[in-house]
Structure formats: C-alpha cells, structure tokens
Length: 377
Image (cartoon, rainbow, N blue to C red; front, side, top):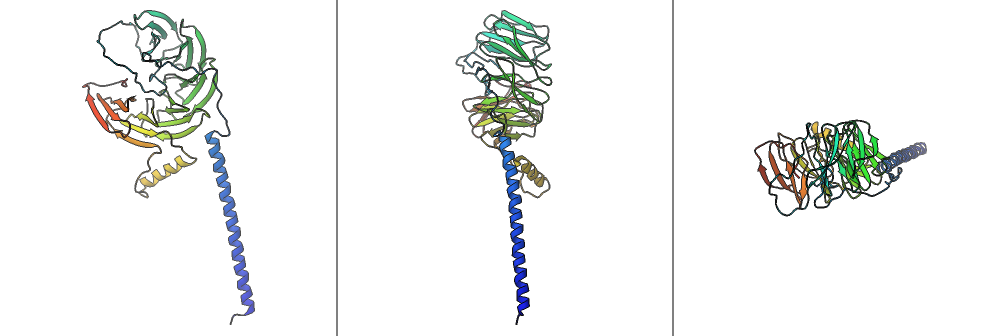
C-alpha cells in the first residue's frame, strides 16, 4: 500500500514535470516566434517592402523597334535578336565604311541612320542608304559596345567608365555619367532609363533625359553583357555564372539562377521563360515567375553539399530550371535569337542549333565548317 507521503511526493514531482514542460514549450514557442519574425522582416526587406519603389525617370522613352530598326544590342528590350522580315537579299554590297582601326562592336540602326563606335575613339553617324557620314564625335576612350538609340539621342558606354548621351541629329553632348570601373556591356534603354553595367559588378539605372542616377544594383560578378527586360522585370547575367531576376519597381532581386558556368551573353526573355547560353555549350530555359525565399539559396547549397558527401541520392535542381540541353561540350555557346517559338544558338565549333523553346527539343543543326565568334540574329 502506498503511503500518503509518497503519494504527495509523486504528485509534486508530476506537477513539477508538467510545469517544466510548460515552461520549455513556452520558451520554445517564444524562440520560434522570434526567429519567424526575424525571417519575416528580412524577407520583407529583401522584397523591397521597406525600401519602397525606386525613383521614376523624367520620360518613358524606349528604343524604336520598327521592322527596319536595330536600335541597340539584341534589337529589343527582351533581347530576342530577331526582326520581322519577308523576302530575300541579293547579296550585293551597297556601301563600305573604311577605318584604320578595328571596329570592336556591332552598329545600331534606326530611322535610316547607322551609329557606330570605332577603335580610334570616335562615334560615327551614317546614312543607312548611302553610307555617307552625317557626323562624328571624338570620345574619351575606345568603346567596345553597341550604342543604344532613341528618337532623339544616342547612348554609348565607353571603356574608361563613361556613359555618354549625345544628340542624335548632330552628336552634341547632352550629358555624361561616370560608373565605378570599366564598361564592357552595351547600354540598354527601357522606359526612360539607361541601364549600364560595370566590370566591378554594379548596374546603374540612369535617367535617359537628365543623366541623373536613379538607383543601382550590386551583383557578385562582373557585368559584361546588357540586361534583358520584360514588363516590370529585368534579367541580368554576370561572368561568375549567375543570372539575377530583378523587380524594376523596387530594384530588388526576385530570383538568382546559378548556371555554374561563365556567362558573357545576355539572357533572352520569351513568354514565361528566359533563355541563357553558357561558356560550356549549354542552353537553359528558366521560369522567371518563380520566387526565391529568404535562406532558400543557402539551404540549396547545403543540400548540394549533402549530395557530394553521399548523404542525398540526387543533387537539388536550381530553382526555376525548366530544361537544359548541352549542345557542345568543347566550346562556348552564344546568346540565342528567338522567333516563333524557336531558339537559335551558335556554338564556337561552327554549328548553328535550332531548338523548341517549349521543351528544348533539338529541331535541327547546321555545320558551317568554320569557327563562329558571334551570336545569330
């Protein structure tokens, strides 16, 4: 028979255990709530809720995209590198522009004019029908980029870090903006803003009319290709293999996609995807509608490490990946051109590839028999 004293002692111990468990549960819930609050605040900050919208430009000017225009690198804001055209070319030379120095980048064509940067520090405007020089202007350094043209101005990124705006009619300087390092990416004009990237990894958003800095975005790698745009989004590639999807309303990233390979070409928007070609001959389609949440990239990195250690059967797929296809294992792949649901990409080994954008199916290949050093258009 249990003594009354022992029963009281057992009851006391049971009450003490319940109290301890209750205190532990309360403390655990308080700790979890605090961590959750911290993550919520961090997520809201990353998403731009606390920072608010970025400043608006003075105008909403864009580069023209008429059938005969190729007014900036990639032709349009999405960088499709394709223009509507019906008919054929006779292959006859119309005119020739001579220079004693290399011509390091493709020209821009708009409204019957051709705009070209030369290797001897000149920006030249020519008549597209006759090749006659309309005006030329000395600039501070060589430019290795394609100009961006609007109805009344021409924008050029110079290798010494200057972003220059000149009048389209006579080449008179409108404004000059200095970035933090050399510029190797062509400028892009979108909704009244000129976007220029630097070798140090800073993307500058500059008012196209006034030349004032509106906002910046800091990437981890060097920016050597212009960004692409669709709606309120921008896709930016860096030479360390990362592609950033950035909200243009807040200036904050929505998604980072790691291609694992060096990138020197621009992404291309097409519908709900953007396409990117890598330095290891791979073309990938990424769903830009996917959002990256706080700590998600770090957790994916840990899962990748667990796979390397043999603790996980398969490596985690990068968020947003729809399909990826290796087109050349031995050479780099160009940025693709996109038209009517088909992506066209060239590999340096001399082959042109056509793929279905929907699922990455290889439709056909053409071997040119020679090395290819540029992207299709």
